[in-house]
Length: 328
Ligand code: UDP
Image (cartoon, rainbow, N blue to C red; front, side, top):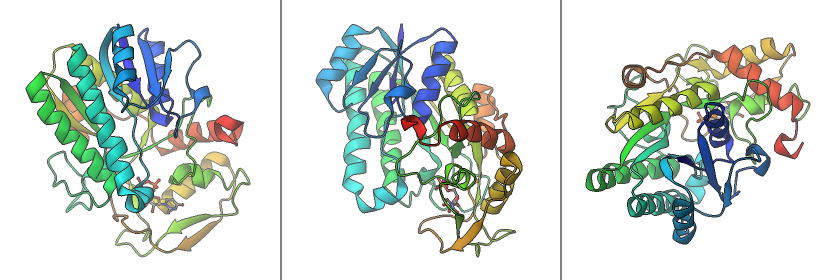
């Protein structure tokens, strides 16, 4: 039986496809290549090129493949862009989810693992953030993911589709041999941008504000290795296959690092000095986001293993060998 990976050519989707193959599963991929990369998908994986909001394409996939479960990564995911183009985010993300759940119910597929985000919480009252913290997204991206979660809840109740919703904190790093990794255009994430300095692609990293109420004044985030994230998805799949109930789990290390600490760690990993500028705050950035991942421990038996040095080292292995990403 196949596992349908929606957005399997993207950063997180492509790492999951590789891991599914490695444990003898049969992943099949749908991707519209708006942000995904064809070379990220192994050539022996069946790839359907097109948009998830196309019911005929979904019907063709579900008819041709015996889809046991879905891993759903396909979404627009840039916070800044979502503020400027909210309708794009609601159309694409919510529209894709509706079409997918309709196809699943038509074809009798009853298990889904969904990539959600810490952005559903917005500015937290306190950290670490647990799954029952208030849900107050501060941008359309987080709002669209929260709407997708709620849709899954009601549709699941009506049609018996069980789900594991995984709320990621800051995902980073790459497949350990550096053969696939992160390639966003434009790149907005901290670790790839820091590593562009030792790569000679930018003169310095700009820290977005050093006047936050944190020990060194820079924002604190919970960085999670992509291989740990993949492990959580495989465990979520096993949970659903074993008859487990629908659940929502945060995924993070449970430990926070400041932007300055990340720059220092990258200096140690690369052995190079990384120049820093301090710029203005980025609108919408909370001072401190750290996960409580206890529930993922209880329900999925999951715990993040990689620390920031390992995460940055794997990202460095990818970027050093692919300075132009998948276009290298
Ligand atoms: N950040 C920064 N400079 C950059 C990019 C990001 O100082 O060029 C900071 C950002 O303000 C946040 C942290 O790094 O505090 C992580 O940002 P990223 O965009 O990677 O992830 P987010 O937390 O927005 O999901």
